[in-house]
Image (cartoon, rainbow, N blue to C red; front, side, top):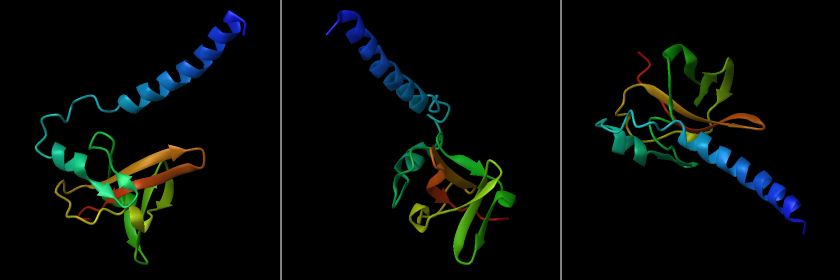
Length: 120
């Protein structure tokens, strides 16, 4: 194979991988490193997998989530999204506030984890 074509091919493979790594690491900037709840957030899991950490979750205000017909739904980016039952965290909410861990994909936003708050 021509060395120039091989170099271009390598760059086309490595650069996108590097960008994915950067975006995944970008949210955990260390601001929660000394939080007494950090290890608890890091251990949170739903049936869909680990929720990551507080840095990856989004706090949701009371008007932006609700329980309806035995299911939760949350408003993100102006749209209501039904929370899959498997995404609901079953353990007590030590943080107090409602949190959601959304995943943006080609089909829109899905919910990896959801932790209801007190709805006060």
